[in-house]
Length: 358
Image 1 (cartoon, one colour):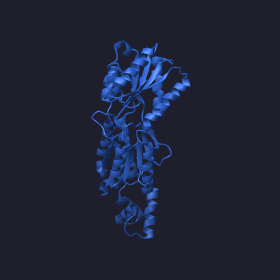
Image 2 (cartoon, rainbow, N blue to C red):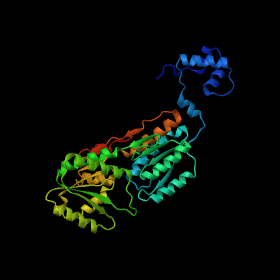
Image 3 (cartoon, one colour):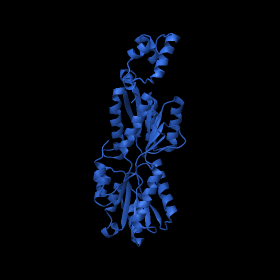
Image 4 (cartoon, rainbow, N blue to C red):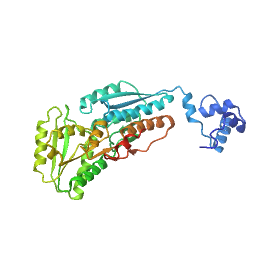
């Protein structure tokens, strides 16, 4: 800490040969001060490397800061519930600085829902914005609007290159895909059949993160000389019959182990499908998924999943809001890219991971 950070205004006034009121007006740039007295005060401030107590100044300030968070809806225990837990915790800590946040939520599988949330957001004024980047091209359009208004914004979930976002907080999706491929190949081998399970919803939307993870996965396969077959299975949770038949066909025709991956947090839906397979076929399949939500963790503990890759969703939300607050309050500019750790979770370490709290 600066050794002069506790110097009082009255001390500066004495050193400069002016009144405390004059020092106060110079520090806060208010009221009239003669050029001679201003130069005296500024000379002393420079000599002692004076830094005012920024926290005290903002606590005394009456300025209010309004943040917006444009994020998906969620159910209890879902991935986005964890992200928003982190957002809420950071906002609570910043409340003393008159910071509040308002959510604008959308169905992550329906871009029309996203458009509606953004339209509602546009009706109000905010000092900073947190954006979940699921709909890439539409996020770019929104970002350009914020650029024109000079409103700082931070991305979470997936980064979008070439934009003027203040920062990105989230996983490295390409690297996550690479790691997933390496782990799965160690389980099943270079010539095994591998399938991507796409969990179908009412709206057929694929996020930026899922696309990038698949690119990273395929990049690894191409580099290591993978010689097996890649399959895609669309899983409809309301009607498992078509996807079950497809899965049986893949496993039965394979002479060895089969690998499977889900690119988002919904691998628990694939587990529900797997439970309908005959046990000998189930034993031939090795699975890898993403995000340590409760239903996935239970499957990992039951050895239905070999690995879960997690990117600490709570920390994403927490760090993003803290960075936005520090930027507006103290002009502290965060790093442009802030990648979360990619944690490799197995049955034996999952309880230690879950014990970690912000």
